[in-house]
Amino acid sequence: MKPQAESLPLYDIHLPDPVSAWPPAPGWWLLLAVVIIAVLVAAFWWRRQYQQQQRRRDCLQQLQHLRSHFDKTDAQACAQINEILKLYCQQHFPAAIALHGQAWIEFLNHSTKTPLFSNQSARALAEAPYAPDRADWRQHYGDLNDLLALAQRWLKSAQTPQTQLKAQQQQATTTEAN
Image 1 (cartoon, rainbow, N blue to C red):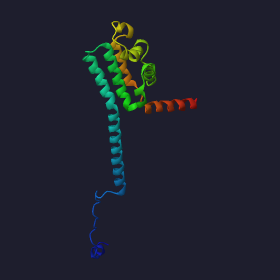
Image 2 (cartoon, rainbow, N blue to C red; image 1 turned 60 degrees about the vertical axis):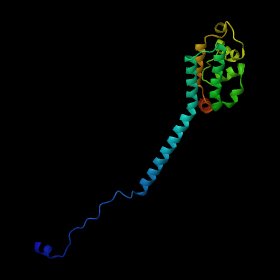
Image 3 (tube, one colour; image 1 turned 180 degrees about the horizontal axis):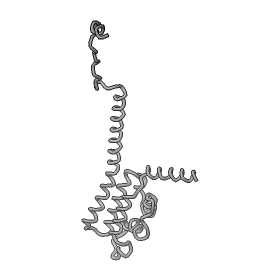
């Protein structure tokens, strides 16, 4: 059998060219497109969130500056706290800018999960910016540092209209399920 195999005119086995990694298959192109789109959407969303939070960070920084460089009367500082809170509201709650007095306090308390401004702090925000300087300011309206701390807490915990809407939808879903 051996002599016969040697006499046949057979060629050596020819291996095909190795499979190249380039160009990739259509599925890889599709995956690359999906990844690029996902990265762009995530970057856009992050940038938008960052810009929306910029006003909050600026207002918190202004309150901190007011606390550390306090050189005004208590009524002037209280008016400045109101201005800072309304500056934040320009972006998220435009209708609240025109509020003053008790309506302003009710808005501030309804825009957080738990009401923050009550008694003296509420009276200070509602009345002090429009009242003349009083000798018994701290007795009547409370400590300004407490008011600054409450304003900072409000800025950190204020629910934007989108957040409030989501919370209402969740609450409605929960009540429907029960």
